[in-house]
Every structure is written in structure tokens, then in C-alpha cells.
Image (spheres, rainbow, N blue to C red):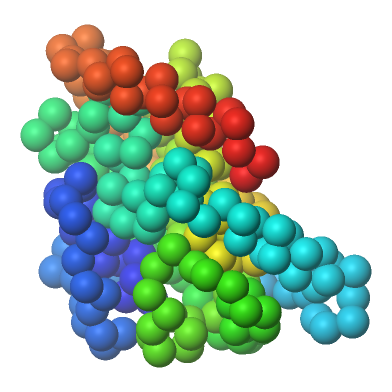
Length: 268
């Protein structure tokens, strides 16, 4: 599963494009080849030993996950469901944060920021893969019937639920971008939270997996700050983001207001 966020990070230059078909698990992104160790490498924390265990049948946490999954099926075909479908595309994370940041960051106006996130990708994969492979928890729609916002493919069913790699990635990016635009941290982190919770709305992750993904992203970012190379790249990206925000253009205010209202009204 390590290919997933290496691919997402390496292909971040396609931010805003329509979601591409998922590559085979053996696929490897060109950019990932040169930054296979990310920033952390073998110094990465063992997230399996830090995260709470995945819920097991017969426990309160397990039943709470089932309850939330079944209740949120009522969100199908609502504006929040549509936002969850939008958030399926991991490559779109910077575009999805554009209202919160005040500008869309992309390879043209923020190449150093994009490169930093590309290098973080393998660190996110590493933090996600080990606990997923150990717990092998089923996704919620495989336990209880209900619609999900994407196709029920064999590849999705074979990918374990806990922790959410999608949310690990989204929260990691959100925390980093919040540091680069601290005056917009509230808006950025609120949207990053919604990005992760879209997996819950979509029905492809349990609540516990989404929460664990958020913790997982926080673990990754905390560890990144211990690396001099990351801190140096972060400072370069900070100047770049400030310039991009000043240059604009600002995203469409009507679309941003609509998005904010959807997020504010949703229970998730």
C-alpha cells in the first residue's frame, strides 16, 4: 500500500484534475523514486505502537462505528455527499484548501511547497501501512449494507480500514499548510477536518479510522519537525505561500461561501 501516497504526492502537479483510475499496488511514482525515504526514513515513529488498537467486534467502539456508519447513510445525495465525492481525489487536497488559504496553491505559484508535500508522501504511507497491515480491519460497508459514494471495487475492499490513510494525508497537509499561512489556520484546519470526515460520509471508513487518521497525521508532522531538512524546506515554502497569497487570484467567494455552509451544517 506504500504506493498510494507516494503516488498522490508525486502526482500533486495534477491538482484539480479529475480523479485518475487507481494504479496497481506495484506501481511506483517517478518522483517517489528519488525521495523514497521521505524526510523520516527509519527515524519515523512506529504508529502501530502509538495509535489505539482498531476496534473489535463486541466492544463499545466497534458498535459505535456501526451506528455512525448506518446513520450517515442518510446523507446520500445531499450537498455533503457531493463534497465527499469531491474529496475522494487525494490529488486535489491543495485545491480543496484554496478557499481556506485564500488562493489555490499549485506547481506554478508554489513549486517548493508542492515539492515538500511530495517528499512527505512516503512518510504518510509508512505511518499508514504498518497498522493497516496488522489490523486488517474491514471497511464499514463490508460489515453493514449501505450505499457508499464510490464504486464498491475489489481493490477498495482489499484495502484495510484502520487507520484512514486518506485522512492521515489530508490532516498532514492541513497542518503543514496551516503553518505556512498561520492567520488562516482555523479555516485551513476546519476544511482539512472535513476532507478527512468525507471518508466517513462516503461510507468507506469507520469513525474510529478517521479519528486515527487525524492522530496519525499529527504524529507524522510532529516527527517531521525533528528533521532539519524539513524545517529548512518549510521556511522556503513559507515565503513562497506568502507571495502566492499576495499575488492571487482569490477563489470564487460564492463557491467558498457555499462550501463553508455545507461543512458548517453537516454533523461530519
